Image 1: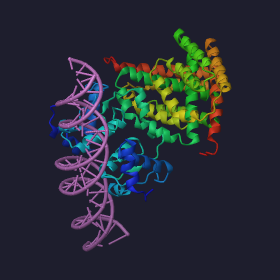
Image 2 (image 1 turned 180 degrees about the vertical axis):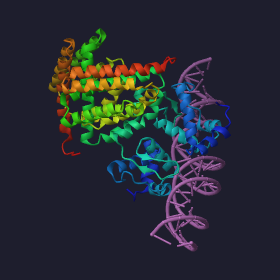
Image 3 (image 1 turned 90 degrees about the horizontal axis):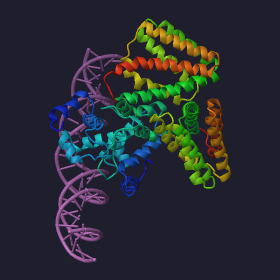
Image 4 (image 1 turned 90 degrees about the vertical axis):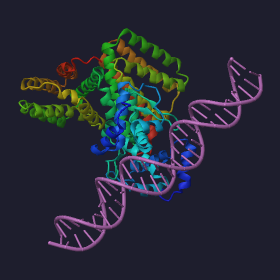
Length: 248
Length: 248
DNA sequence: TTCGTTATTTTGGTATGACCAAATTGCGTC
DNA sequence: GACGCAATTTGGTCATACCAAAATAACGAA
């Protein structure tokens, strides 16, 4: 592909397609990245070399790089060489980050997202109660212990709290779930950060986690779902008050 | 903001921030779009006017436009004026379209995504069985009738099939769900398209839908979930065979 | 020789100015 | 007032130039 004729793949592809010249470059780089020809983590050649390779101006090359970056195929830090990134579920979700953050500006959107989380975690605990393996249970126990240990340190507790829920997302062994969890936590974090915390509240939280695990150990999906619902709705109440004044 | 001093907001913001100059413009336009100052559907001023407004070169202005476009805030067709687009849940998911399609190249990824769908729809039917309103039920019945009517026309049947499931996604009254449904169907469509169809299979599908509705009417979440699981796993079997030969 | 330091060269970010082709606008005609 | 053609705008692309930061090479001290 390096030996391609730029009169064929470059200008031609651009003009016929009606699209921009950058599209051709984007497509080619995309293929190279996905196919592994460009190794994940490696850096791209300098722009001036790319323009030679693709027979395009720097303008076009840079437009291609910009687009690929926002599509998640490249990591383009201000003054550094672009780094090749093979799309993963995490990066996919990261891609919508900006938009979601704006959606999050309104209270109703936060509630919508939180409902999604509630929905997912209800399903997850059911799944866990029904199909958890020994090591899942072990992980849950461990997370709970860490939880308890951190009750007096709200900062640390928050982390162990997130970690507890993360265990549930790993139960289905489907990589999409952990990616979703990461997205949730990062999107909801700003609101959770404003939530007042205290050892008492942490302890309450801990007990709710405990109840969830208990139901899971009983292999009781309905009970687990109910415990999870109570847990998350309680958390929502604490967050909701931070919205005072905001209407939408 | 139009009367801003370009020596302050333009170059300065760029150089101090360490980021690119485009970032400032991106941020400003983003705010204007989200705040509604730039009306959704309206067109942006010409690039040459924007460069005057923002005190930046066309290079930078165009980079901002490109980025905003791939972030879903603008719709930028090749030779036309960019159109303002307020982000919606649909557009958010559309944004990751390209990456997901690549992920979908491997069989395991398709399975992962399909499992997610199964997970979601299991939760949805439970929700429906427990909390469906009269009009939800009505919509399900209607979808089922349309379903039956189209049994002999595989093309039409596929549409009514999708429509049936779509009803479930509307039950929670959370706009994120329908957006997810659209995403699923568009991402999985290429594989579903390859699936062999016939009136017999359509009829079987119809009966499965019927079973789901029956369980919902019985207000039986477990039964509904089971019916849904059977339904989707059966469909998966039909799709799976189209993967023959592919390993990953 | 090795490790820091300092020159030098690359390289990315931005600005200009120009050109073409398609889109838009304006105008004169039917 | 509808229609078609000419003039003007506007978006896409290129070439060039400059600066500052980054990468690299050269160099001197330990």
